[in-house]
Image (cartoon, rainbow, N blue to C red):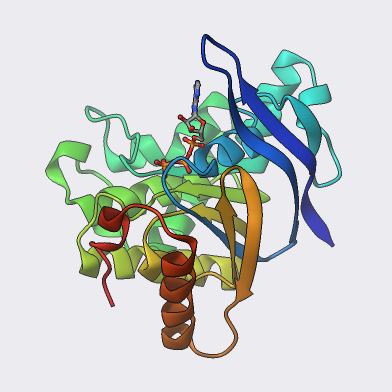
Length: 256
Ligand SMILES: Nc1ncnc2c1ncn2[C@@H]1O[C@H](COP(=O)(O)OP(=O)(O)OP(=O)(O)O)[C@@H](O)[C@H]1O
């Protein structure tokens, strides 16, 4: 079943200099698929993620999530749709520093006014899954970057979203923490069947996906599938990035 359908999507940013950031994008992501979006700086990756996540509205075309067009919803319905159907993971974690890990994780359920018992049960389950049970009482400033990202993933996953959207989730992490975070995302994708879309410059992170779609100059340029070997996929991703071009610094942080 198709979880995400992007049809003829385009985005033009108006202004003194008009920027056509995306042009006629067609992309389908199946239920349970883990898809990476890569491309040179300025190619339109974040714009695509912002349109799929309903943060920004398209200039042309449409986005369907579970067959529903979120842009057709009223403001309140859209807020509820976002809270229940979509999970977000960001490079800089977006956690509230003065709250505990547990308070941060249950925040989406608190906003949805879920019963306390349900929150506790879900918190326990997700904390076990992400290996952060022993830090639930700590405040965000007391934990490491890798632990912060795990807490952010737990917060994104606790409502049971249909689609998890991750924007450079390893961008602030060292290679060991990056690997651990990607293994967790891959594990959740496999065990919970959550569909995932990841935007990243990091070939290591992208190599955990089932498929990587490349964007260049606001258009889809190609896609490659993982197959059995993550190592071979990693190599293919690097070759494709070199082929597509971009700035040298984008490839300078490659971690094998
Ligand atoms: N709010 C905005 N207003 C005007 N132009 C924008 C806006 N956001 C992005 N752009 C432009 O749209 C194009 C695509 O930007 P986008 O951020 O989607 O690229 P990206 O692939 O995510 O880049 P990076 O890898 O550097 O994050 C760029 O030319 C950018 O300058």
